[in-house]
Image (tube, rainbow, N blue to C red):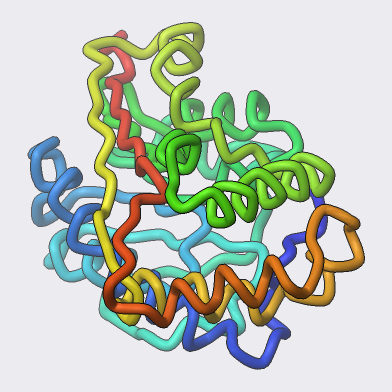
Length: 258
């Protein structure tokens, strides 16, 4: 895996993860509920659990008698505890977690940071029991191709060039369905959701926090200058500016019964 550009050691990463949970957990829970596979006694696995908010919710849903396993490279920012919640430090690229075990396996905003996404997805599928469901949620930055005004679009052009250099794939969302089909999953389906937001909103705050954390790295990459970054941050503070950024792509499939 490439070095994670927003490591847990950064001063603001705990607050940024909490904001991400606020913005994305409701959508994530809704997609899990639609699968109708999590109930008392179920076994679930979340890979790349961040602050643990989804895994803690899953632990409540599988009680009594079930088990929710949460895996991340770094567990230092998990701020939840729950009965039936098991925390593990691990890397999904190196191998499956308890092959053939889980009724639900899910990962959100993980694979776009993984150098070998094929290996990671193969191991996620291997962790499923026959008849289990895999739910992946990943970004697709398609909306930024029409972002306005032009300086905002120029910022995102620089962001995508910087991310490619750092080994981050912000178009991976559109590739999930064919990749799951190639791994033998069936009944594959999904949807993409794009938040429409304005300056001063929680999404704008998320980007402000993220860009401030990464500013030095962005500038040193040669893809940005200070004026462009300051212009974008100015729009993030302007309530009259409305935009769209990420099409969060949620795709699920089922492992065939043997």
